[in-house]
Length: 388
Image (cartoon, rainbow, N blue to C red; front, side, top):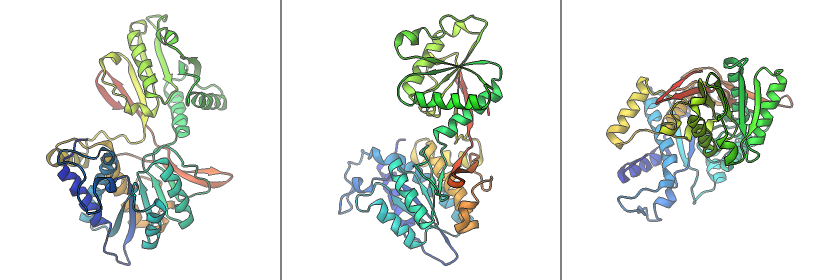
């Protein structure tokens, strides 16, 4: 997202304001960890290291998430929700993550929203369990190896949950139809295949799955080349590799004339593929996401208008996610306090997207919590819409 130096400095200024709240015994406390790289943008004297026309790109994702959270804080303030909010730079060179967490615990923080890397989340999950502080993993689809930790919540579903959702989607929508799952011998593909095979065995072959390996260009070019024009093609790309997925879409689009219709279902990583390319025309493309926002509601329109006028850009998905999570869980923290980890399910204070947060069990104990809600999106010839 394009930002000016002025807007960057303004956001940094806001961080310092929220990092030093006025406390009150009746107020609950929330912390946000996000990668701002402030130490790389300013020297020890507080001078900006870059020229007036240059922006530190490493800071963009963290700032986008923070800016959405800051807008949510404004909304909560307007509603007189009594929260103290602390913001931490997860990429700080002056303080370790452990030192920052210690400050959180000392200040009485009860909830952490973390837009962090997997390594950082592993640390925060461990520290949260030790101090009984709920940690929300806002962005990474991984459980950070959390076990026996009812204080760790995965909001972006893990690949296991995504595959279970994909199987249920196929079982509901394509019963009786032949589904070809395309994989390779490398990367995560064998794991994806094994999970789908295990699910199909458990559900007694409820989905007619056959697997096809595409390991070289010869196999790729033969894909869809010999079918009958009256046949509807139905494929699943069992790979997280977006480059491989793009090649499959392009090849099936090239051979689309050999099908009555052709549908390709991909992995959640396909949200990073530019689906509007002309070489994909004619292929119905489906993939899942836990954070679908059509941006037609009043709050989304207000945020978009604000960005257009003030930032001269469109708000990213991280802006909306930062807003939605801070708004919802800020409300829940205000209502339930330290008991928030037991009140995560349900639709209270929903903003842009639904969530279905459920406990994952291991050996009869709660391993962690995870959002099980998935939206399935369909893209065809320029139109993207939710279909499930």
